[in-house]
Figure (cartoon, rainbow, N blue to C red):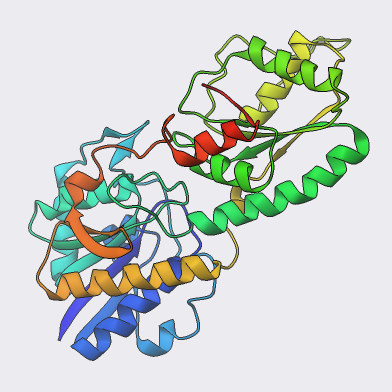
Length: 358
């Protein structure tokens, strides 16, 4: 019997447990046994693993989070910044390969984003068989049409926007609602379009603060006293903001992009708008996956197991045109998938009168 190690690294994501369970349920009848490494790559480096049997994975597919737990920091970071490669210390790679050999591991199925998969590609060069599964709620891996967890994150954000609409209208307030998306604004775009946002601000495009404040003022001139502004956490607002204006002279320690933008608007138009900000944060990661993500996760898990059994290595499973295929990991991690001016949902939002940064 061949023993396969399963690990997930990076941020948690709705659907992770469904991927893990599907790999095991598909692989056990094929003659494989499985262990799961805890806390991502650190589990492989520290030899902390748990057996993954059919009994252990029964009843976990609908659960959020991951039974293996995870980490997005450590000795095995494969990407830094916005996607620049990070060369892992060869001694760390050798230790990972040696630990796998010591534990009788034939190969790994690695579930992660571009950073995790970049690390996997480097380890593959040391002779360890690897099959990757794309994992990111940001939906920014270019080699696949869709990543699991994205639909659930969008639904969480959409539900929040539905609730914020009523309180904004009741008190004539402008709400800045911050969604995850450091480099790619897919969650903000989809949730903003679904949740009837008045403006959607994305990290892919420049932001003109004067034009945006003018837009808010024109809304009020038309007696539209409330507004819902969806803000991607990676929106670039520049570095000129130092704090609030007004009676207090104390410097403000700014949090995310939504808070920074709220203070910027106040500086440019003091007292003109009643404003609040809401950071959805990790609510977009947590909770049970919606049905669409459960199905997609299971498809990824099954195809990863089948690809491994076919003898493939250094590949990532991808969903393309509703078919599951494999692509080289190097291709999968070359670039991020970003919103463009040609993206259908971006154009749709503009045609519906939503303010967009361009």
